[in-house]
Image (cartoon, rainbow, N blue to C red; front, top):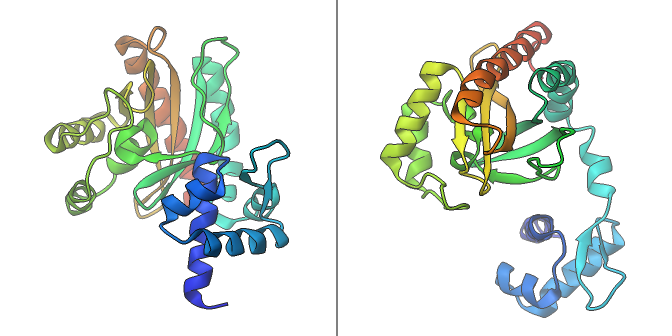
Length: 252
């Protein structure tokens, strides 16, 4: 198998993961590849145990649990998760809201842990979900630790709108990031999901590089501006405690 073939196979896996279930025609159209070629890749990935057809018609493709079993032992995310868990549990006890732990991946943040609230009305993102940094509290927290050149580079690639109130104006985003730098935590008012607000803080390594972030999320009806102002420092304290433990362990 050539390098290009390997890259194409991984690209198809990523596309399937983004939509959870997808048919051959839709996958071929999104990947901009002939259906015959995509079908061959799909059969190879099926044989390797990475994907499977859905049991009910029409036939669609979905990831198997193989991805989780392989990735659960990946170095950095799982190490951070292990370090973070006691602090995430404590943060949830304090706030009683949904707690998220995410790591940066290119222009996105990927959710690696979620602690659900007991409230019936709550924020929900599936583990493995990825979202643009500028649209989420976890992403904004990470961006607040970027230098200005990194911010400009991010903005130059466009600001995708994923919800009605997603920040898509470069000046507004810069102001939001600067505010997060001043406070030590970010806030997100329905920028990722309609009706959901959140506050987040970055977890950094010994050099101050953001390696993850934690957030408190919930419906706007509960997470009013004064609640975000109250919970933001709590999220920052949790992120700071996790960062301190990361320093002690060295590079992860």
